[in-house]
Amino acid sequence: MKKSQSLLLVAVCLMASFLGAFAYKTWFDTDSTILIKQGDETPYRNVNTSEMANLETGFIDASKSSTASVVFIKTESQQYQSSGFWGFGFDPFGRIGKVASTGSGVIISADGYIVTNNHVIANADKIDVVLSSNKKSYSAELIGADPSSDLALLKVQATDLKPITFSNSDDVQIGQWVLAVGNPFNLTSTVTAGIVSAKGRNINIVNNQFPIESFIQTDAAINPGNSGGALVNLEGDLVGVNTAIASKTGSYVGYGFAIPSNIVMKTIDDLREYGEVQRGFVGVDVVDIDGDIGEKLGSNGVLIKRITGTNDEAAKKLEVGDVISKINEKIIDSKSTFDERIAYLRPGDIVKFEVFRNENKMELELTLVNKNGTTKITKKESIISETLGGEFEAISKLEAKTFRIENGVKVTNISTGKLRKMNISEGFIFVKVNGEAQNDPAQLIELLEFYKGQIRIEGIASNGSTQYLSFTFR
Image (cartoon, rainbow, N blue to C red; front, side, top):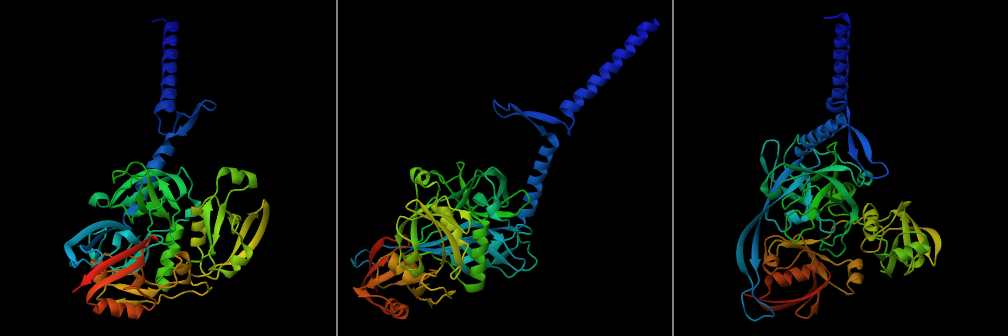
């Protein structure tokens, strides 16, 4: 071979080696970049494949961390059906039998405190908690429940549990990755991935006189059994408690909802310390405003439609038609956001409001009150009847004004007993029994425990509707 031919062959080999190395570095090396189409103005962006590997690692690490803090909850309750209406002489207490259901919960302390949804354990006679780590089962005690936020606090006699770490739900961004951890369809320790689709959603599912709904929406798959489980970020920290799905079939179709972690934290702190949630009330009813009003004011917000009369200071400083645009410097863009901001506060807290009245901006301060119109921290004052299966308490000033009634006795924490047989719902208010106004819990308990014959009840259901019931007690 001639010398010139040899030099040419060497040059070609070197060039081929260079091109091969360049191609590998460009398209196959794990530290290279790939092109992802975005749009017309910026048609492509470079994504380092090591970033994709980091994302996968984030999913794995968050799953390992959070599944150890999510438990499987099994409940058992006695169900009845009512067969008598308006006292036609039928026995109203038809037993159906025991009903079992399942859900999820999140460990919040090493010594056995667990948060779940109220609807997971409502009316349960027996609550069992199964750990994901060793499948050990514990009998759980109900420490307290808050139907208005659909949260409940349980306690098991265990130590060295793995509590989840709370994240600040105010920092959650639309579009960020999240994982839903729970037990859908009895498939324990299931993890699904998605993004935060929206914040501050109100979907009108909390059946309570004073509901708090400001959900985080996600497209991570959530199904029956996920309720009470964890919605976590890629650090494995809690951003919300999974609560509901929007579906016509009862199964996941792309829309899941979680209670923000900040509301969860405040609720469980109150339940542990006071036995009930300390809710602060402004003393007004608000509604969302449309874009035209917001554009006219140069601000979004909520419109005051009614002054309730429960907060004397609010009655003096606010008017129907005022628009509240900020609370403690935080922008209020919907009723759900308004409810969420107030839900973080307690009676006696002083709150700074930005208000528009006739297109004029004002700044004012108001002190929040409790449900009786005072600034005191309240302690639950109720009388328990094991025979009836519930706790009875006189209605608050707020409930009286909201439902426009002068008297009433409310029942909560319904368990096995006469009330469940009568299909009396959680939060039901007895206004009249046999035409007599009810105001004293002890007297109502005595009447219902020992009464024989036909009994007629007029009351207010938890959703605010008036109900008339009648039974024959034998």
